[in-house]
Image (cartoon, rainbow, N blue to C red; front, top):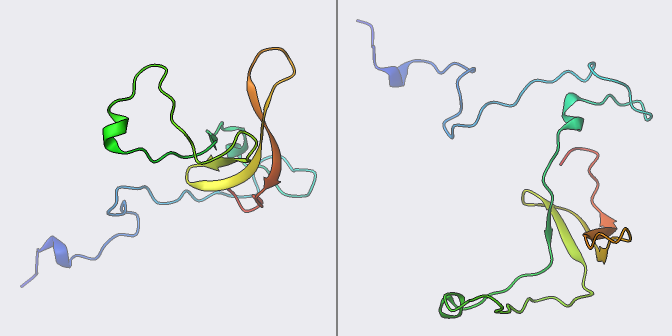
Length: 122
């Protein structure tokens, strides 16, 4: 007699993992233009990625947090001249100094002072 219980059927390697994530894509490094250092670029090199800049942290009490209003000031654990940290997701990729851009736009920029080795990806 054959057992029809799905729990005893062998799992296909093409199934989506239980966490709902898709399996990693198989990429060929033979596709794409050559870089100056001999490595090939992939199509992902043109995809924009969000970088978060962390200037500091605060740890207010919940009672103080619910009292926040316009013009409230939250004190951070850093000073104005301390380095900021750059993250992609949860990975620290660089540190730098905040500076105002010289183009008169009033925008902020970050001058990098330390950069992680990203040669194996982000």
